[in-house]
Image (cartoon, rainbow, N blue to C red; front, top):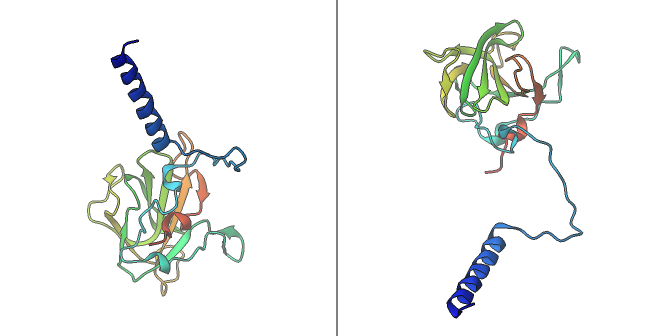
Length: 189
């Protein structure tokens, strides 16, 4: 090989080694390895915007595992206490899947994530933002509704009941598996 060929080959090897060192973290052979299950994009800690305007992470409480109706049902959500009328914001980009009224949740919004793998459920709403409609695209931070106490909520304690459901392919807006939203919202600042 000519000198120029050897020099080019040597430069390629050096650059490749530097690139690999930059991109790949070397893990010792005896280091423990853990494999996390596949999770929706929103399942990363702190991935979602706190859905009530002006509420800091320190004001959140993890009420996911609590029970309701004298222990008859699991809560599987968190309650975010706030003044009636405070803006309820989209936690992520997505689409309004369903606007719904129920005896328990009162006025509600079901928002599907952009990738379709999560449903965000907002309940006890006082009212919807003007023009909010099923099928509408929403952006993270967009006002969708206001905090209230509709449904079975205590009228003297307005709050947002917020839940996240992991969705399987083709599951309807009312399906999915509840996942704790608290770690997705309560991130260190």
